[in-house]
Image 1: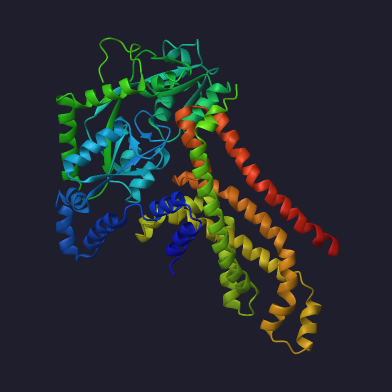
Image 2: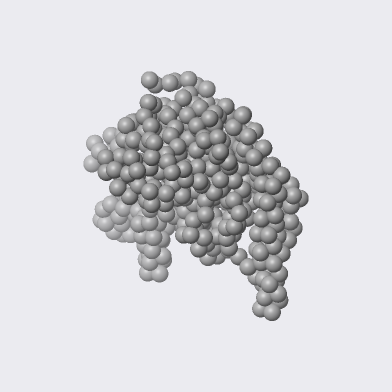
Amino acid sequence: MPVETMLLAQAGKQDCPFLKERTEKLFFPLARTEITRRSILFAAAALPFGAQASEADDPAAVLNAIRASGVLRAPVMLSEEPGYIKDRATGAWSGYYTSFLQSIADDLGVKLQPVETSWGNLAADFQAHKLDVAIGVNPNPQRALVVDYLSVPIFSDAWAILTPKGEHAATWAELNVPAKRITVQTGSTMQIVARALLPDAQVTPVADRPTALLELQSSRSDAILLSILDALDVHARGIGDVSLPRPILQNPATLCVARQEGNAGFINFLTTWVEQERSLGLAQSTLAKAWKARGIDLSILPPDFTF
Amino acid sequence: MFDLSVITANAGLLWQGLLVTLFYTVATIATGLLIGFAVGLAQLSSSLPLRLVGRVYVEFFRNIPLLVILLWSYYALPIFLHLNITKAWAGYLSLSFYIAAFYAEILRAGVESIDAGQVDAATALGMSAGQRMQRVILPQAIRRMLPPLVGQSIIQMKNTTLLSAITVPDLLYQGSYISSFTYKPMEVYTAVAAIFLIVLVPLTALARRMEGPHAHAH
């Protein structure tokens, strides 16, 4: 009996529907669709060199493969609310980034397949062909060595600081002193921002946002560097105070795709999608809905600030 | 200061995490025992190539950190071998292969701890190699092996928390998840620690009881 059948049988024997369902989902998350995708890629790889070259030359190769597979694989992650929200009861994903991804999947006529990961593992996910597109990424030349970024952002927010209640930071310069302990997330653009703006401060990278908050709450950190939307989301739950240090640093959130031949058509499709989202105000409306749902107060932003 | 409602409100998620943790613990211990037994016997074999294979297996899996094996199998296998295994498979196989190396060593050490004179005596009685192992050596060795096997299995349950690194929804993953929306990590991780204690303390007590008679007998 194959091991997977044994494991499923074991889960079934324990008469635990949750475990059985969970095991099935874990072991066969994509079922037939992934096999189709892989078959296409494998078939392409198996072609003689001449044929493979023409396949690779086809700028729509990746776009066509995604449409043929019927699924769009995109990363989702914990600790990234309100961008990615995992439903407590069903485990289904929502949040404004998921809404954007759903809109892309709808335009492609495929099903959105959330692939759970973390910022730190994102590059590995792309290299291991586990993802088609990621959203909410900040352009980063190091990561650009392994993925292709879109040249246009879906929106731009700003870098903010979360401090213990009652404390504020008016400028980046006042944080850039050896006594200040700043917490950032590993694998994120915050690390680069902190390195560039706060070279004199003590910068500590941690795995995720809850750990960063633990640093702040246990007085091991004076401030957490976060995007303004994330900082305000935390603040809305009664934790800390948010500052928008001057000069305001805009933080473009864009999309990236796996670096592979034949992805030009896919990038072109996504760029067109972004342009439409921006020009028709769709992106702004998705974001506004998210703020409203989470009770986020944006009054800290200057009146002329636009996303 | 300590907000217990975070735990009670999300007890369902912690329970689901515990089930996944127990599932991986039991499944990987069972598979690890099978592989470990085979590798252990290979190490004790009279055939040099078999001994070598056993030794290489043990050294390979015992000396690479489990987290590296886990990340490697999930991310590197698709890149190098075009083997796109799911996170569940990556987790199950990594944990099984890893613990098998330790089980194999426990088996080898257990068998080798049996006095060589007993082998000679069994040989003098005309027993074959298989009979010696089955009737004389293993019954004694298994008694000696039990405490370290239980100890290693307890470590294995704690090792399953590394699965959260590849987002398998085990107990620690659910802890991180609850922390991510309640912003109460202190309460949540304390609860996770308490759950591990509740499950593992009885098992360690059992391991001690097994050690007791063994210690007195020798």
